[in-house]
Image (cartoon, rainbow, N blue to C red; front, side):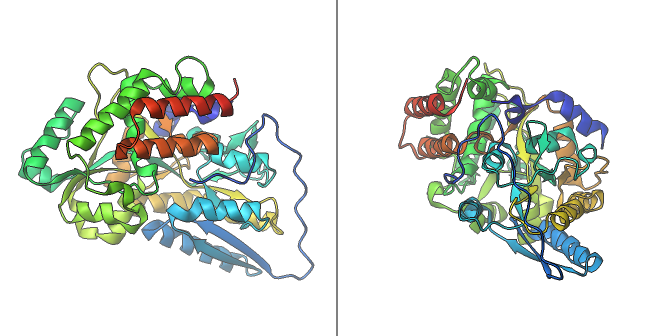
Length: 438
């Protein structure tokens, strides 16, 4: 396995600072790529129709759609059908389309291992030399680069802070915690006031996995996942993973989350509603949370704050270790009839101009170099990323799909207390031995 999909190096982060679930139908990624056939040419005089699948919402959706409209004005012979699909069912829908041989011309991914499986199945157009890789920050473009070939263009980076209601914290004289002991003190105080400490909607399993990654990092350090993934050192049944599960179950038993969280759909917005109405005080989520707030409850924005996940006493992780990833990465299907037009549309959607608008209006951290951050949330996220000592990529976007699904299943079971942390760790390690090659 290549190191590129495990832990993005600190040097890439300095560049950033200076410059501003479902089993797939594709086979497991081999070490070499199959030969990619030439795309079918368009028939003479044929109306050029492109399809684009994406998951963005709110202001990000508006800006993407405006860019597409401008693209069609600039290319009057091209018609683009942009299909917005909710995040939770997106993977299944795209996997079925890919497996059925009827994919969209351009599609959203998160890069990493999930995209590589489609690449290895010869379903993605090689963009090497077709886009300017120098215009992207290394942390972004590396997520779509396999064996020195480029298969996607990154639009944005996503970080995971702890969001909190500043009004609630001020009312009860609470401060953003630096340590886990301080966090648990906050949890106890909130419970006494009948306020849910953490909002969580985990029916689709990935939201709780964000928390699990932070516990594992803060206990085991920035290399815990990389060692297990690369089969070099500690493994997925390491004591840090077991203790991470145990601490999570302690938080669940302490009433740290809203009841029934494993049956609540994140896309429905139920966990965010708990935040908007003051029933919950904190939520651990990706950068897209800001976009959700501005779309769903703009008046809540003035109450919204964020802080990094605290350190754990005795643990090896730092408060400057960040969980995050690249989202979206836009790729072109190898089956497209119009590869040139598809590439041109990707260029428009990954332009510096759109990147600046996303930063200014949607609080987005762009994958483009040279973006100026003036939006308060975007600036804070960029500062967090620029000062990060490591960036841990999302497990479910880095691991091969079979292992990624088990990771989400076992994590959900840990939160639901239907599986012990030891059992979960043993299952992960047993599957890793089957799936990951040394």
